[in-house]
Length: 125
Image (cartoon, rainbow, N blue to C red; front, side, top):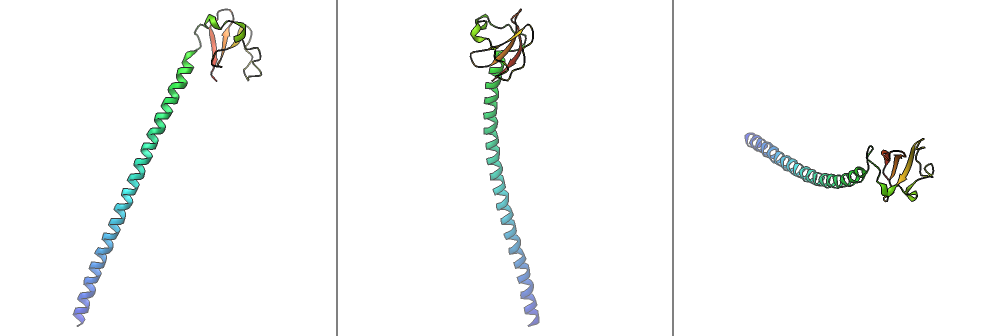
């Protein structure tokens, strides 16, 4: 009788441990799959954000590339209505002797040498 009880106890212990191990494995597998799904969602969100960022960057650099230091300031902007006399009110520094601030059609500010009409500085709004 004792042997039967010991045998049944041993069998229950072995089978119980196996069942517990199987449950633990199933839970670990489910956790892994959930983390993989979350990772894939984050990866897609990151890619969408990167695409949006690249579009914004392209648009910004396209606008910035319109004017650059060393380029000639186009004659069509030489008119008085493009000159910025209130440079302090729009938070620009003093252009200095021989220089003048101009505003282009897009509201960007450009500091130009008055004698040569060469762009010295660009402030993109």
